[in-house]
Image 1 (tube, helix red, strand yellow):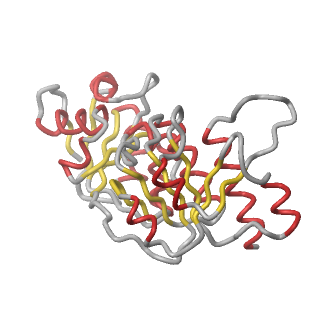
Image 2: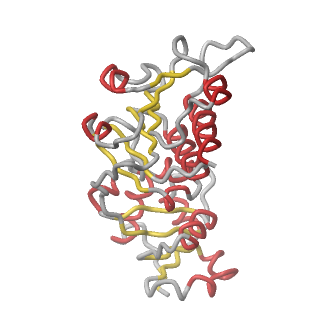
Length: 257
C-alpha cells in the first residue's frame, strides 16, 4: 500500500484527468471507475484493475478486501480523493483499468447503433438495456457521447463489461452488420406492438437510435428495412430516446426467447 498526500503527485494528476475529462481515456489507454458498486461489477466480469485507489476511511474499514487484486494499491486522505472525483457526492474508492479501442465490427450479431446521441445518461441507460436484453454489440457513430467517459460509465452501472463497444463507426460499418436494420419514428411506420402480435418483428436485428433532437440521420434511415412507431395513447409527442430503446430492445428480445 502506498500513501499519497500531495495534490501535485503525478498519480493524483493522472487520476483527476481520467475522472473529470470526457475523452482522457483515449489518450491514456486507461479509464477510471469510481465507487464500490462499479468496481465490483467489473471484477465479476473478470476485469482486473491496474491500480486500486482508496480513501483513508475506506482503507481502515475494507482495505484488506482490495489488496490482493493488484500490487498497486494507493491510499489518499478523504479530502484529496474528493478533489479528483467527478461526482457531486464522491465515492471512497476507484479503479484505474486498461483500455484499448475496439475496432472490429462483428457481422450477424444483434446490435445497437447509437447515432450521435449527446446525453451521457441516455447513452449509459441504453447500454444497460442492451446488456439486459441480450444485445452484445453496440456501435457508436462519430459524434456520440464518449462511451467510456466517467458519466457514461456511471449511467451504465456495469453494463460496459458485458458488451462489445465500438466507437467512431461509419454508416458503411452498419451496412456490414448483415442483419435487418430497424429505426424508430414518431410519425410513420407500423406500431411495434402490432408487429409483435403478428410475428413480424425480427429478433436478430440492429436497432438504430438517433440524436435526441434530430433523430436518426437520413443516411441511416435510408438503410433501414423497417421504421416503427411506439403507441402513445396518452398523447405525448415523443419519448425519451432511452425509454424508446428499452421498449424496442425488449420487444425484439421477447421474439428471440
